[in-house]
Image (tube, rainbow, N blue to C red):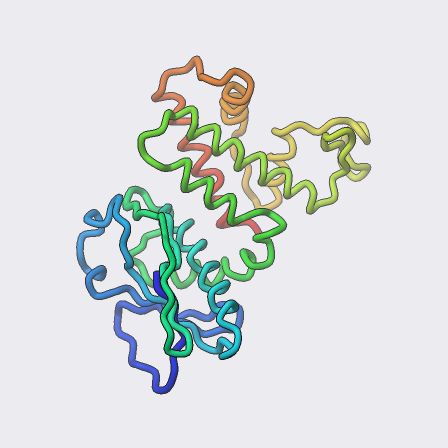
Length: 263
């Protein structure tokens, strides 16, 4: 993705552009002509520049602000596409700078419909304030990175599931800290406001269930927790690869739904 700040007269945007208002800042996400309308499968596994992000209102003496802004947009696009979206170059005050990237495009089962501009616009504008507010507290950039790594081809399915177990551990732990759940000897313990014995140890499953229920999610967790425990404590699964893949898909869907729903 290329980021730039416009100077002088603005151009007129066509159907390959999504106008955005992100945190009070106007910008336009513009897909390049060679991308619009063509088969997306041709980009699978490739390193390619598909889009430009035009950002308005960046102070002329602060290019880093524009780059931080664009990097955050790239992280949200990475989550939406399950591809390693990165800013490959930027233009500021008529100067263009390039930087090395290592990401590749994926076209298999993106969480959002990339061809639906209205859906992408709604997603970016609704998720933006939450992402910027919680990206450090909940380690959201790291979470997205681990989702991308987990979904790469050619890995043992136990490795993929282990990476998602790390993601779930991070999400429940950062949630618990944000809720000021007490910690004793390195473990979360029950606060006075919760049912049960105050000060007793709170396990992974209960914290995960409380985190999910806060945003209205009430999935069955028994089999997911059992698969997580098996990978964490025993390493290789006793189950067949097909069954472990099923657990992986369930965990991936759970994380994606939570990140789209969490406030």
